[in-house]
Image 1 (spheres, chains in turn cyan, green):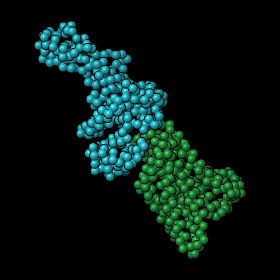
Image 2 (cartoon, rainbow over the protein chains, first blue to last red):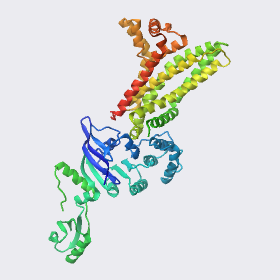
Image 3 (cartoon, rainbow over the protein chains, first blue to last red):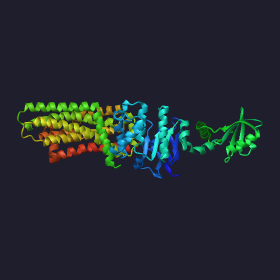
Image 4 (cartoon, rainbow over the protein chains, first blue to last red):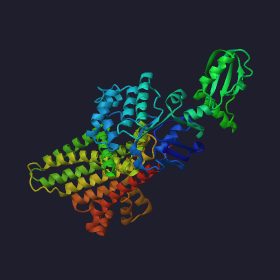
Length: 309
Length: 278
């Protein structure tokens, strides 16, 4: 898959504080890519360097396998973390202005704006000043401004923060639509559950460094995505000898198994049912949050501990 | 998007924002009211002589322009970028496909259009009022004065933008701008006079010192336009007239243009560095 965005050895320091430390990552074209990490990890600084809001001390930002130019930003839609809106402008004028900055003339953007406002439930808000809108409504206006010029690449910095569940759903629907249309979407979040549900690929950042990156399933497999939990009566000590089980460990009332790479869980269950009185058999893959904690631990220890059944 | 289009889109938004700014509207309306008041006084004092009426109005407008225009330009320029930082919209602008030159020139041009429009209306209405029913009025010096007032506005906006681009908050930027205005308006001439006395400077050196102050440059140009000579300014004025002769007005204009271009170029350079202001 072609790279849509590549960050090569980016570094940014503020005085003695190293916000981004030799960070490299690749965002494949046409994927939903999550930039994950706790607050202060360096996500926003990384995105700002990506968008040429701040210059890196060293390193390079590449779009479509060549150094980024200002013209590349014409095909990017960016939603900043701090919501930059012109509060005294009307919603309509604000959106027209953002469209014009991307070369979309008023007469072309006007029907688009009307459609978008209707879609996000702000059909009557076009003539209102932005300062008259609630915070959630302002975020919807900001999302429209991000997508109005139909960008090929959408970059969203903490898009869900401050949104109620209904509006989060709306944002997710819009992202899903853009994903179906083959657009590249990168968003940052510190909420792992959101990333787990939305992302095809991700990079985990901690202390300004990428500590883990890759496809979602690949990462899950790497960190025990092939783990299953078995509750059954009988002697479970010999589980590891069952075909298709790589290793197993006994816990309080259940056994945790790591399946071999090509094992079909349904086939394994059939074999287990023949050997044991199976009461429960389910995936016990770690959550992204658990993976993150493990990855931070590994990065700190400087070695890969891998999955421990 | 072409650079010119980007500049125009930004300039248009900046101009509209300026007319939404209450402080700017109050200052612009006060300028208009004062200009009309001065024109009415000049007209009522000189019956039937359009030239004298226009001349008196122009002389009065010099003081008004020297007081109001630098304040408007410096304050609006200072708030233009630091204000966007306060609102969080500056980062959004930086993320658009706009280069540093487009950002700086777009802001500059928008503010110049706003201030220029209010001056055009004020000068225009004052001129119409004072010259109505009169004959023999020469508008050339009057238009010249308007031109130099626009150059002063451009220089002030440019300095204001430079202050804005290095300021984290609008309040501190506007504070610095007002301090700069006080220095120009109050300390400028007096400072030059004090320096001349204390250091025993000759007329040429006093003139050199005055040329560093855009407000003094505007005053010299305005007096030259209205009076046709700088003898009012004493020995320094005489030196200026003698040394520069007919090149005096173009030279003064060039100095004001430099005052507009150099800070704007510096502001552009600082924006291009894409560094966060601490």
